[in-house]
Amino acid sequence: MRVNKIIPYGRQSIDELDILEINKVLNSDWLTQGPVVTHFEQALSEYCSAAYAVACTNATAALHVACLALGLTVNDIVWTSPNTFLSSANCARFCGAQIDFVDIDEKTYNLCPDKLEAKLLTAEKLDKLPKIIIPVHFAGQSCDMKKIHQLAKKFNFHIIEDASHAIGATYLDKRIGCCQYSDITIFSFHPVKIITTGEGGAALTNSKEIAEKIRLYITHGMTRDSKKMENPSNDLWYYEQIELGFNYRITDIHCALGLSQLKKIDTFIRKRHELVARYNEGLKDLPLTLPYQHPDTYSSFHLYVICLMAEYKNKTRAQLFNELRQANIGVNVHYIPVHTQPYYKKFGFQWGDFPVSEDYYHRTITLPLYPGLSYEQQDTIISIIKNILT
Image 1 (cartoon, rainbow, N blue to C red):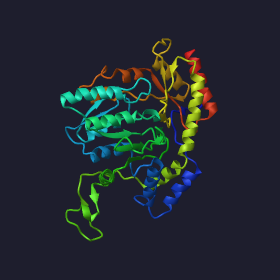
Image 2: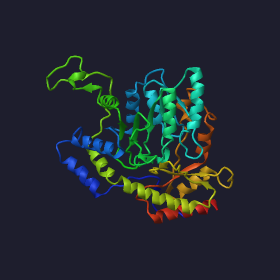
Image 3: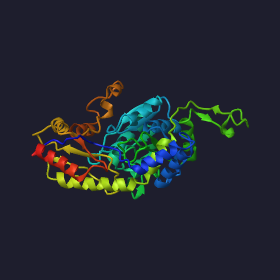
Image 4: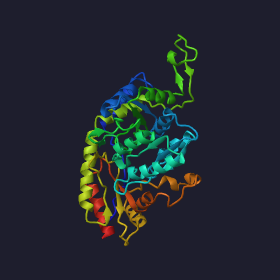
């Protein structure tokens, strides 16, 4: 069996209302750094119940400036999950900091708080405690943030939630992004994520000081605020660069799309949950481990990942992946463990360092999941998987 047109693992959902909002900006006086950026930031902070939101070019940029805003520098240490995209680790390296990893929980595939605690106790004895921990809410499900926050208070580290997968999700009945258990939360608005701005990201925080630093870093380190200047001036044209910053600014065009998408986010997530329930029912009798959901969380289900059971020997993960691709099912793998990448192996990391992440990687496949996926398409995917595995 083969579908005629490839079904991707993720895809944006754009309608006429989105296009209308973008056209309004195109016909306005502002294309970038105008009022729509501010409106989008306000809408994000209100939706998540955070005090401040700063939108920027993408989540990688947001992670970078979040680290800078927390004072990360050379010789500091950051820990994150091996089961993530490269940016969760790269942001530390952008600042010249050292990076290390904490293995994942066997059920949620998130950074394991018990392994984190054990590693912190060892690091304390060696005087090598991290300055920042970056837990990653993999596939849209929150990490155990309450436990991680308790450890932060005990071992004195900052927390940046990498919630690139998780806008719209909740933890202990509060929306991810409220920053109850972190200093900063990061979102991604890439087209395959829950909502999109085309490309874009945001950093949310409850600290005015952190928000101001992030905004400074995304705008060349430049200020027009006379209170922050070395040589204040009343001249309207005057500005000063007070930090080494970057051009990480987002545009009104992107934010117009983001504002329109944010109005539909809960509808998008409900549809994702409907599709997940159908996958769970259709795949339940196969030699697969299906996504586990912790009762403290409500996932936004950015990804639907299945794992071949270790005892199943008739097909390898590679065979299943290739046969699905040959059938035009655009499956993917999330993720190759970061510590096994050639760049990070230069720092001494190697296969075997984080066995749970590595075992997960060798058995996992991401199936198509997005609001526009039809039930007919999904039934075809399920049928093809059954044909391959039985």
